[in-house]
Image (cartoon, rainbow, N blue to C red; front, side):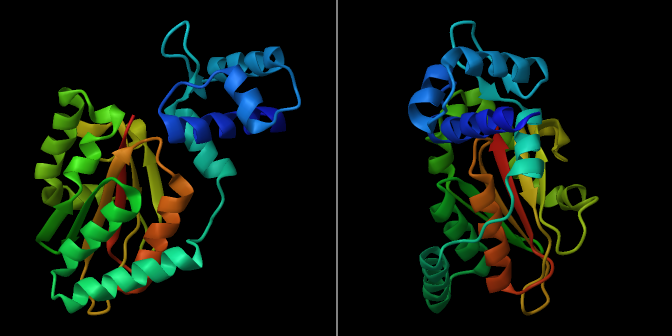
Amino acid sequence: MNARQQKILSAVIEDYTNTAIPVGSNVLVEKYNFKISTATIRNDMVQLEKEGYLHQPHISAGRIPTDKGYKYFVEEMMGDTELTLAEQKRLQTELLKMKAQHNRLSRTTAKLLSSFTGNLAISGLEKDFAEFGIRELLEQPEFKEIDAFCKVAEALDYIDENIDTLLKGVKPGETRIFIGKENPIKEISNCSMVISPYRTKKGEKGVLAIIGPKRMQYAKNKSLINYMKKLLGASAVVIMIISHL
């Protein structure tokens, strides 16, 4: 993939993340300041589709990223970012506030992750699991169809039984992203997950999960996960982001 095609793929992912609408060449020219013709962009998009990075859901529609496209973006282009100082301060303040209210840590972290991402979050310390954000998940267009939502909801009912499966192949302290069919939970193989193990300051093992569309903000969510790990303690809660195709 050449540099121009990388820029096109990145722009398609950014726009689709924000709108959930397939992206056409005219949109890229108008919104992303490409100094080339729409015809050139269309040709590159056709090539990216042939190579499996983009998909055209309908003949008259624009294109959306595929699993391969997201994976290439995450592994080759995204890079690491950090939360802004304002976001860090807000996260610290909210966490301390909830602790002062004597809320369960699993409930607190799930609620915080949901509020920061607008998605469903799950948090567990050993066998103590909590979830927050079902309403937020249902508001996403990917989950408007009841069948799609039910598959995710059914898998969540057994999330505590799948912890070993989720951790398989993930190194301590590693933040890892699984996209689509790479998903360790086969029942929701049309989803993506970001996983990172660590421990609380008391040495407890836990699990955190954020569930939402695959068009999530990967860089921001990864940085949110890493910062939450610092706040909670340091080397083994599992933070998982699951998102729909």
